[in-house]
Length: 462
Image 1 (cartoon, one colour):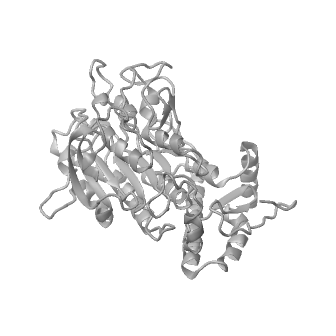
Image 2 (image 1 turned 45 degrees about the vertical axis):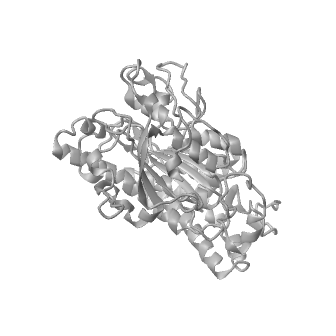
Image 3 (image 1 turned 90 degrees about the vertical axis):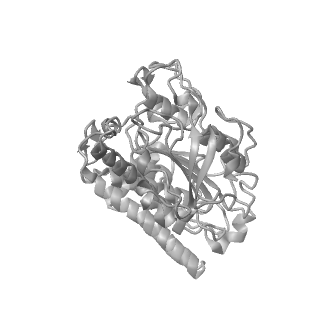
């Protein structure tokens, strides 16, 4: 694409390009899937051998991690009416038909074995790798390659970003954090190799600039400063082209484009509002600019950015660490002054167990909002983006009071493009959670027979 010398911008003439963007000064806005160009997209052949559904639409894979296990009594569904959501999962009622709650999965490599204490660090390290972390607080960390990175490496660069790593926690990659385990185990979900964590980004502003900025690091810095100086947003630099393209689209696609650009604008406004607070104190450290004061707002921003990244096919693979395992965060939004980790070790007191369940519900509610948004987004094949996804929510600790690692809290959202039944409570036979990962990789077009400590695919899934 060419640009004029005075930094004005031109829209690409090729309406059917799969990688079509609206570009402005140091800005790239990737368009959402549009039905007006559906046949051309599906015939493009990009990623046709993998990471697509049977209709040719993009197939997304994502993983969200929650800390400290769950309050068991309030978690697993009832079966009086076929599939009855328990207290904690009530926020998922609106997307109940698009999820399956899975029991029976375990992570044996998160158990103490001969390593002793450190269940939280082990759980985090094992969650997406299925491997046992070497107990060390030094630089000789070793665990395994995570499922998201295995998929990203197999697929290659079929999207602008092969994967996206996000966190709602400040990242710590050095020193010791949990009973002799390196902090890197506790603060990273994604591992590109057994010795290499893929550091996530926790600042929504930085993620936004990374996804929708263009050029080198210096160019992005300069362009961002210019936008701030002129009080213009990213959309201000592309809105003229956005208006021009409207005339070339169908009525439904014009509405879709309006909704998408409105979503980008909304995220910008929320990031700008967070910036006004500057360094907002929390129990551990000062929050950098771009991170909202309210934890719920921070999570929602990350989820909304991820939703747009999926909608524009910027990436098909993502991880989001909602809170590091072992987190002792307090929840003033819920009227809970005690730390989460502290509460999980006092669940024999019913009044504290109820507070743990309320925190579990808080995380589920934020995730449910994200799922509902994906369910309302139409994909290139006419199905929802949620339909064309497989999204895991859970953790590698079951009961935080006992530090158990069997019968893990796991919810799988999305139908994988129509391959899987949803709206059910799937009681699987006891087996490694890695079996689920083998099934997901195979469905993604990756012919791996094993992963982590797997014994085969999760046959009950299909």
